[in-house]
Image 1 (cartoon, rainbow, N blue to C red):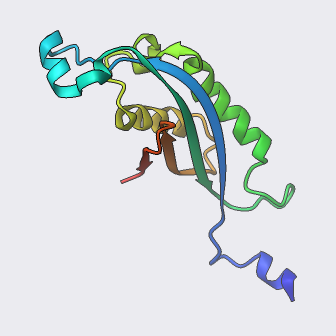
Image 2 (image 1 turned 30 degrees about the vertical axis):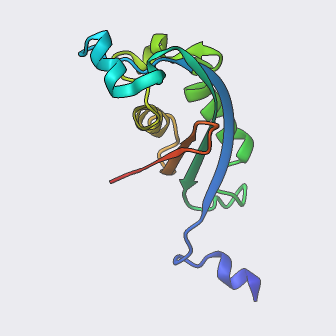
Length: 144
């Protein structure tokens, strides 16, 4: 009985992984004066740090050879290479992939989503990327 369901085309399968990184940032808008940035972002204009968690959910067909969408270790490697390595233990205001972006969680998550989507095999769909800031706040990005 179980084997009859494995080829069932109505099943949608997703996998989820989490990675962590530490980084510093200051919320400063280059289009605003220092005073205007301070009014908008308050104390967050000062350089401060967070312990971030990135959660990634991908969907795809279960592969006949491996019996999985993608090996978890392979997805971890791609996320580490595309997102974590460029930002871990860095000042996010100085990171190339975030150049010109005010490093709010919303902006960072959107950039990370785009970067990762371009670093996945075509057979996979990036369903969501969640960025948690370590203070209990999270931003979730999905495709529109």
